[in-house]
Image 1: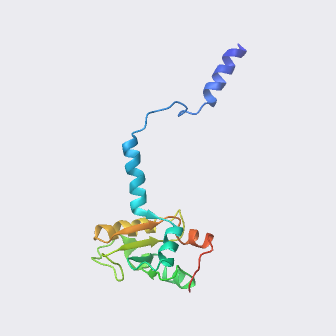
Image 2: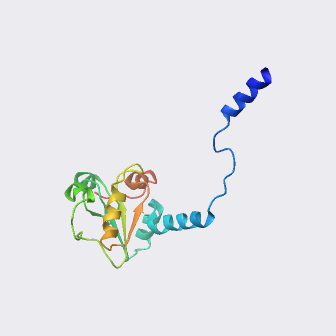
Image 3: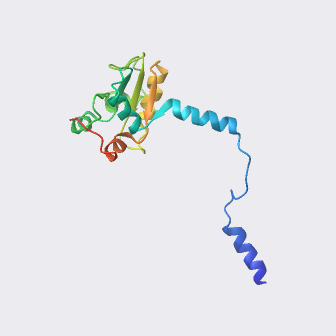
Length: 147
């Protein structure tokens, strides 16, 4: 009886994914390539600033009042509240470029405003990369902030 109880307890304790399921490695490779093509991080932005990249525009989509309190050096502000949370019908956005990348950031890793903005910008033909972690990640690395 103890052996049966032990086996039942063991079965319940094992996670459902304990077995190996073959992965489609081609899809996995494409997924990670897409991540590299469409995302960057605070370090990538800092590197662009330090290298004085002329083909990158840094775009802050936080509220204007938050931008004024501090933002990444050289960033332009396209506040989400002035653009219907990037779900409106605007045909273009001032300051964005089509001849280089637009690095888009919002508040934190949990904030999806940069994703919404990046989607909208891409639909209009603007090359974009989402800055993973947003402004919070930038501050966490103690990179320079301007007001």
